[in-house]
Length: 143
Image 1: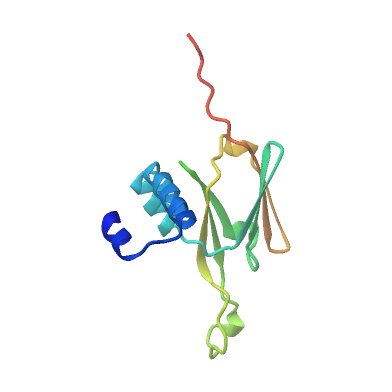
Image 2 (image 1 turned 60 degrees about the vertical axis):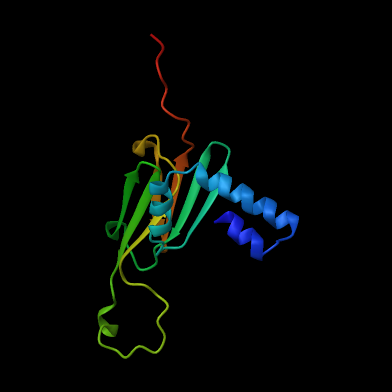
């Protein structure tokens, strides 16, 4: 397939180098993980910052209380699930513009959590804040 592509299109050498590096990177990731990452729904916008030994994750959960938000630990990260309810006064109105999402919303965050008890969480003014210690792996005892 690659030879077929090269016969009809000769990219500049620099672009070809990036293409080859990208293929090498993708070949190191299992197909299941690529599929999971591509299919992961991203309904909630997030910002991830790293400072010293912590990740700080900020997620827009406007209109949700702490009872409406759940976090689920996964093998390669964690999932934020929020249930944003449609305000009663607009349930039957005619839609003029529709940019907000309502219902069950989810976003996958690709940060591994070593111990869920160490994650600091809070929700204030529609902003979910998480402080997550950097995952350093599990210690293996030498016998």
